[in-house]
Length: 318
Image (cartoon, rainbow, N blue to C red; front, side, top):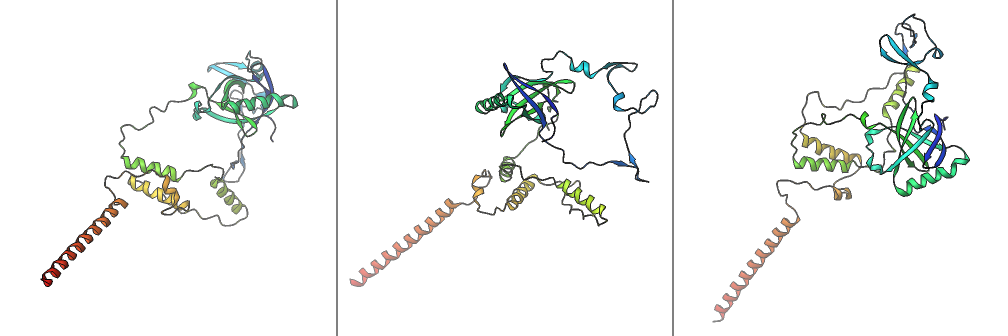
């Protein structure tokens, strides 16, 4: 595991749980440096003072808040660490809520909370099992990187995870983004629902970063002097082409079925919402009625033939 980013404790009522904060994810993206195109010299970002033009090291750089262009209030790291916050070195649990009550938009970064030694093993396990049994998550406050933050503690396998949350006033309202006065046909909605069910998955653990893989192949080919990989065939529609929505939905459903190896008559069709068509499609009941009508007509014809034969036999006998 990587080294801890922060050490402190979880405050759980009167219980204190020493913990270490460890990043729950890692950056696997490929990063580039900037180079001068003419001679491939490295282009670097240098920190230079605006007043004297002197290049500065990190030790010579401090923090400050600009009140006006001519006045800046300096603030040191020591002053930030000594601020009278109860959450300065603790993740203080303030309430427990249902996980469904947390808007996913508010979740930022995620971190694992590792128990800080053997003394923390029992209270750590106690909090984890309390969260599991209550089926709730803990909402907590903590101070980190110069500000107080809001977080959510949740159990993942055998560990407690801290999800950093945005404060309510940091979330922008999407009210003005939704399109207005759009009319949808019921068949379009049903077909969209069918598409979601056809593309349903139990988990997403099998997804891969194809862009990163292609980028690795490109870098490897260029470093070895080989030809670069051929670009993938462009399957996008022509710019400006308007596609019928219902046709697009139908094609998407069929493509999703083919990609999953599902063919007509598969058991997956039984879970799909039925299409509500304006026309009544001929079904088994209609076919059954036609067959019954044919049998009735045949019986009537046989009865007429039998009656005519009996009448002729009576006349011959007389």
